[in-house]
Length: 69
Image (tube, rainbow, N blue to C red; front, side, top):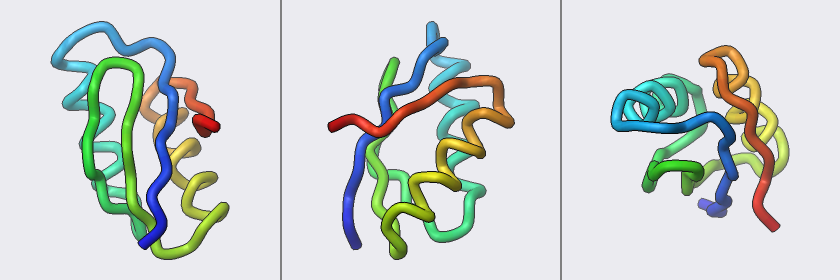
């Protein structure tokens, strides 16, 4: 499974980490490897489509995210 990291804006506390973890874990095709303030490391079965799904799930939870290069 390819790994990728997202930079996430707007995270400030443990509750944010919990919300981000829940949003990503409930997204089909994603495996959450690590969530910390400002970032999440994920594994996914399908490349760019999974990145887009992860970013959309975070937007729905109230966070903006972008792929770390």
